[in-house]
Image (tube, rainbow, N blue to C red; front, side, top):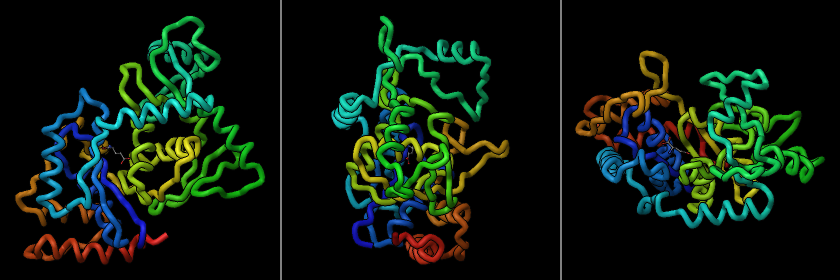
Length: 316
Ligand code: GLU
């Protein structure tokens, strides 16, 4: 498909593991099945947790598996200017504001209102600084999500479907290529989310939106744990006047305890000395059939590109 651009965007906090390979392989297969381009972006905004060594290891692992990008990687740590410009544009449009609240203060505000967060359902920001800092020192910057939500509704009144998402009955609705229709009430479930953190680091939500647009990404393929971040990213794209790509969220690999396999969770580094074996494991998670053990990795990849096309035709 002409114009298709996909990407794999690892955070280099450690080497690839079985879980992250699933996203890498799926995004590569989708791009190849579309006859498009595939890029790698190092999401090293969280500088204290990232390392150049881990980034080099990831690039070496991808190369050993035959997943080769069409361009040199983009490094988020070098994109500060672009993130600042995006924040400035939001501030100028009245869609971002400084926030002085610490985590403890946010928790106290919720407790005072009798609301208790759970691990899987954190509470939205209560909006304390929306009306101004009241003499307190700014710490973070937040997206005026509630305000933009109303503004979007006003601007699109009467239009049922705009681009790749719609808002109706208090819910943003979008269609994931694997999961189908997804909905979220972003102001109620997420609230005014952070764009720049109190420690000065750029938040994932802002960086990912700015860079997907900068790299002209048309199709995002990534792990299912990020599916509920998508409505936030769609609102930011709309607020910044950027296009919304299509999204496909892949199944997660879970550990014995049912938690998502992750580096923080002690997932072992992926061994690439037997490329086929590594790829085979990820292909299975994606619902692709196994190939005979003596198959060359390149032939297995070519086989899965065809199978992937049949499953998730990347054409729009
Ligand atoms: N850097 C994110 C991660 O490693 C992925 C971001 C994305 O694909 O949007 O989980």
